[in-house]
Length: 227
Image (tube, rainbow, N blue to C red; front, side):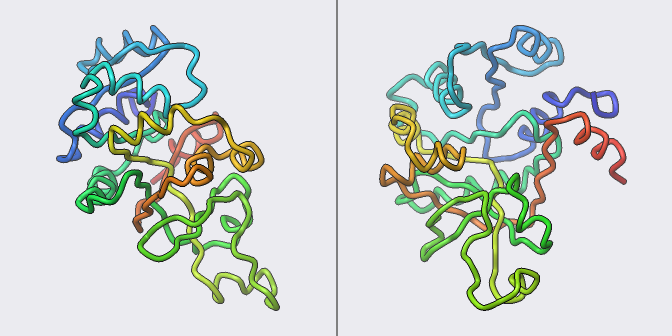
């Protein structure tokens, strides 16, 4: 609970504010979450307990909602349930990437301004290339700045952290859920590397949105003390 509203319902209400979203659905394998969302006026769907990732869960839910033929004509946005302050504006920015018909997968990135973020392995970094396409994602600070002290890296180069909200064209979503785990994914513990290794392009758009995920009791305390 955060100021009297559960975290999952906060996420739901924030996403509902994004004008691009035709339908908002909580996909879960937990009956308690399912019942809670319904009791508080939201829409929810029970999914399999065996999904290895959130992407697989989202794909199952989208298939149920739209059917295989309908899914191909839609963009599916995956918002994590640990983002109680997800910005509707950030969701709109992400959806806007698909105005380009060549975009199959999109995500967001934010410029890093603090050295502690740059070298924190829990903060995923993305290296963007030409055309806003991600070259690589890593828990390490990439690229390596040759001949400069680590304390000077942020003034020598623009580094970006990955904001973990994804959107997919429906047919691409179906394809990537059929891929086997890849060596880079296993090494870094980052699912999106599986897609890159298999030749899929990920469009990354800049945003000023600062992700505030709640994954531990300590995170919750930080949120509750937020001015």
